[in-house]
Length: 115
Image 1 (cartoon, rainbow, N blue to C red):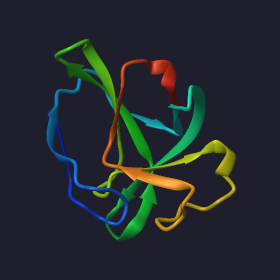
Image 2: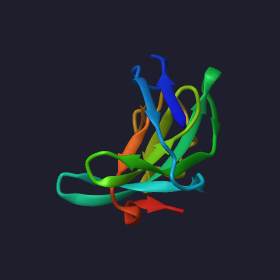
Image 3: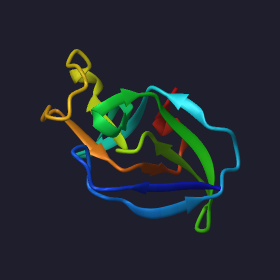
Image 4: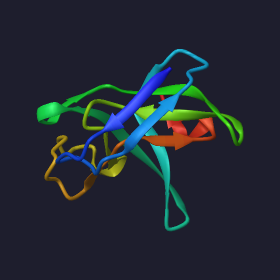
């Protein structure tokens, strides 16, 4: 079982406590695909740990009561940070307005995860 409990921090709001049952090993990822105004946009993803330290984000296949399984995108104690690939030349920074943080993300389609 994997527990996610991201407390409010400079990267993102609190997540609350979630417990997931892993059904495959975690895999490091480089990004995700998001939908923005009807368009699919590729984004980089990084983990954020305490103190704003950036590291590797991961995807893990987890059990999901609705669809059988889902893909959990997760990072550090402070969640994950996302930026559009178009802004990849900008360093990871908690104060960068072209980046945003989230506790974690869930996806139903592996094609939306960039390895």
